Length: 449
Image 1 (cartoon, helix red, strand yellow):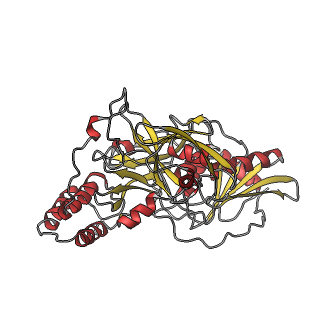
Image 2 (tube, rainbow, N blue to C red):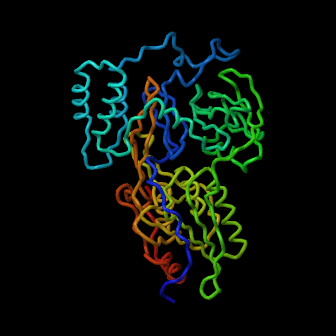
């Protein structure tokens, strides 16, 4: 059988512009900074090493804090020093993904030109940093004022008014701390404070879990409560706090069962609007229910999905892949960004999948689409995707301002650069179900490495 199937798919409302950044769980060991959790649209947060720790005035009993974090007096932040700090971050981390042929040699000349004159005011220093970053020709690398950085750090992906960061301890492990908190939000009102360490959620220890995983545990229906065990400050005390959820995030998953081939073939249709902390959990529920209803094919609609939490996209892709399949490659100047992300679980479903895409399918959506396509789990239908496959890191400067720097990019399992190219679909219109099965049978798996 050949030809095209007719399926009534309501187009989603027009989206806003694609998100300015993507998410990665990887951490960059740069400039003696503490690395924040992957938050918002996947930004890596880095902070000056002392200010983020909030060390106690006296050492904890039977425990000595790391010596390198102690400081006798705060250093004065000069305007020259602030500009040089921003320059150094670019010098150490920036990945030129365009055609500007950035090099450290030309960047060194830029430093000499900028610092040859006295910088009299903080406002002037910020202006110089803005011009310096705009000269890189990267639309996603930019300066954040102290107010903008503060607002970004308070981004709430938990639904209880906090976000989390992963902080390395003296044993080489990570602990989870409250990075930002919304004043008078649910957690703040209940007694959680910025800098608190998260020990458990609903009596489940969070040791070894990522900030993304714990943020997902904190999520739940609005009006329900969650118990968070926290340690206030560096030494305690430890307190269990019940927080009433006021969920900001809403489910991005909508699904229904369609009957195609004149009512003969049940097809599970799933619309995923964005990748937030609820996406994976709600998608699992939808997939299981549709499977129980007899769905023999699945349609995953990612049209006009601009992305969101890239880690959510990675975890969602794994739901469809076999253990060991490549989800995505990350590339960057730092060795920590040279990663192959693979699926570590068995697929939730085995049925053939169709992924609907268009020119506003971006970022995390493109990671999912390419992972399923390149591993022969899905055919792509629609228009070429947007082409947003970059990784940004957010660095806090010493005066509380910040810089967003492009530090890496995503490459598909077939070793194609997503950024600026997008992903070409297999079909422009929804093909017949038999054609989908035949196409997947002829598909060739990617070479590993």
